[in-house]
Amino acid sequence: MSKYRNNPAAVRALVRETEVHKDAYIDQEVFDLEMEQVFTNSWVYVGHASQIPNKGDYYTTTVGDQPVVMVRHSDDSIKVLHNRCPHKGVKVAGEGCGNTGKFFRCPYHAWTFKTDGSLLSIPLKNGYTDTGFESCEASHGMAAVKNVQVYRDFVFCRLANEGISFEEFFGDSLTTIDNMVDRSPVGKLEVAGGVLRYINNCNWKMLVDNQTDTCHPMVAHESSAGTAVDVWKRAPEGTPKPMAVELFAPFASPYEFFEKMGIRVWPNGHGHTGVSDSIHADYSAIPDYWEAMVANYGEDRAKQILGECRHNTVYFPNMTMKGPIQAMRVFKPLGPGKTLVESWTFRLVGAPDILLERTLMYTRLINAPTSVVAHDDTEMYERAQEVLHSRGRDWVNLQRLYDGSEQPDVSTVTNGTNEWQMRNQMRAWVKFMGPAAKAE
Image 1: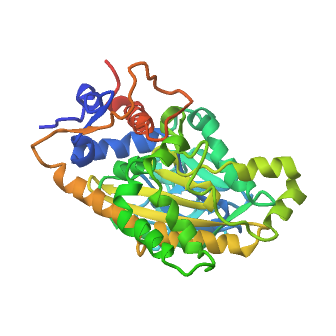
Image 2: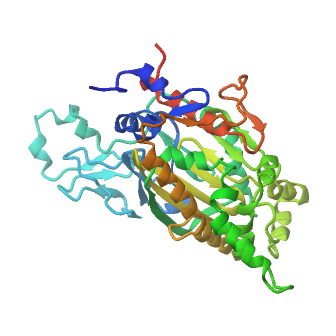
Image 3: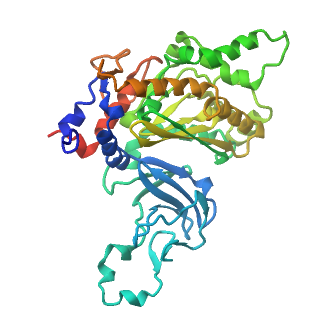
């Protein structure tokens, strides 16, 4: 018997003002509804334009559980296609990336499609004469995602044909992307260093929650960042401070630091830590970088750009960005208890190479499958996922600094240890569950 499908009241009941029922993290039926609704009705990150610089370049990925291919079309525009041949349903683009030339060719029966998805040719096409082929679904080619938006080279799509606009969905939260791009003296980013992928045996929402959970670093990361700081304290006087220590040390900051740091929430589940301060705010100056920024932006604008040091920005549903360090992660749901993490790094075009070196080192130390810090989090995620099946308690608590007057879909700044952003994400979750949670 179905517990949640066709039962919007039951779906809505999973989220209270300050609590989330454990089924939102462990139930297969809830997960299936998320794929059908949340990842269909919201705008989801697909890829970056620098991954497909030339006509015919493509990159394969997923949006929720839907396989798609992002491709540079013949008119230089970017298209997102469902990666499925309309003939027998075979995946057309089988490699992770490449150049397909002027068309895609299905490896099964050699049907070909233009890079906008439209049908180009069929072998022995006369075999379809007088069969009514022109009116069937297959004649339309590979299905194209109608709603694609490229914002400063970041490519997003909304799988649903109708729904919230890109501008309304993101609103002022796009300022995080603006700031990261503007950190390039020429206002341009490119993916560099490839991508690191690893799997966490937990629900994707746990990873999203963790990005604005500022009460865990000084506890969970004591064994990693805390140890690095202790070792550094024993270094001989006058020893130059290693870049790794600069990157590790802020994770061992006390509660007071994170409280004062601040959290900003935006409508539709977006938000970020690091309003008045940040763990990225005290890195060493990079020679020649400031001069390059001033030359291109002027001193006042350069100060404004580099003075903004947001820590983690959450783009609901599953993307998080660290603008000051040019790093991004995407949390790809594979099942209720399994998530693929993609960790990406970007080059600031026109900036000194040492900035990319710092980005790559940060990713290896913090956000990689071989990292030290992320393994602390991984242990917490997997402990939680395992015992959410316990019958001892049914709810996950998000109550810290809750105020009964708190409203959904607002833009505001609050205490840096407030769990408002986690509540904000779950309100968005209910909203974009759409028909599955629609009030009767």
